[in-house]
Image (cartoon, rainbow, N blue to C red):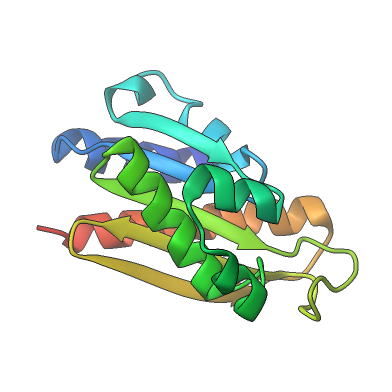
Length: 162
């Protein structure tokens, strides 16, 4: 029997392939887990271009071009940081869509932000969609739930695009 995660990955594969689109990722709190999910099925290379894991503020600045002022003013765990990460990776990789995720998997607060707070952003030509979400559970449970939520959000945005 197919798991919900596998069904979701198949949906993402299907929409990117059917629309002939390319995807890049910028992950912080999930540390490459979403990339691993996307690449889990054969055929990911048909649409999956690249992924960057930027765990530190410095790597977000250097690799993705996130402005120091954004990180100083809003923090690494913020909607603004997620939006800048998504835009940065999309522009650098020249893909159609870029998904980013940043957050606090716990167990204690980071930047005065509670464990379980996650921000997801999707960049595409003409815009950036973003949202914040709160999850409960262990680090692994939050990582899995946030990754699934990010892929569902991506699927939703791509399905109504152009």
